[in-house]
Image (tube, rainbow, N blue to C red):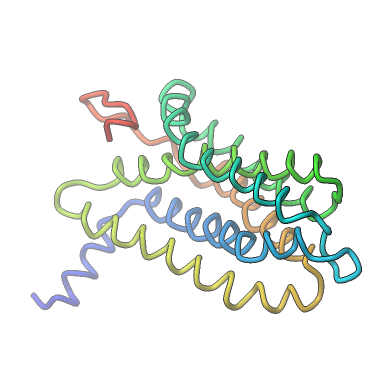
Length: 212
């Protein structure tokens, strides 16, 4: 059997839930990196140029607050998902992520922008470990390495397409369109989660998502 045939066999071995979270990861990461590619510039750019006109110091404080949370919150969200279920936590994450992106496109005061971005960060923090957890529960020893390879590929593809192709076009119209794009990109995942995603079965060992 050729390597190409083996790859096709591996691709066919993944269940629907695997491909569902791959799509989720692509759109969520694309939305996130699309926004982050212009966020600092947008916040310090003058109002007359279409920005918010914040000082560099205030923007630095904001980003130094939200960035660590993206790495701290997944530790907590794993425990939350183990208790309340992946599907419920994902639904909540997509709602507040989309709301956070949308509000950032409309509000102009520093405090409201801060709150909007906090919503986005909490949603992203809740989302992140549930995707890798679902992949771990949708693969086995025969295809897990390839499965996680596809997972990281979806991250890189989203991080490439959104900032380098979509963002420059939207930025030429209005910076607010970038945040609206992200709101749509994460908002529709709520419906994908409701109608397509299935609660993954817990492994027989009953390991927590942190242990997975």
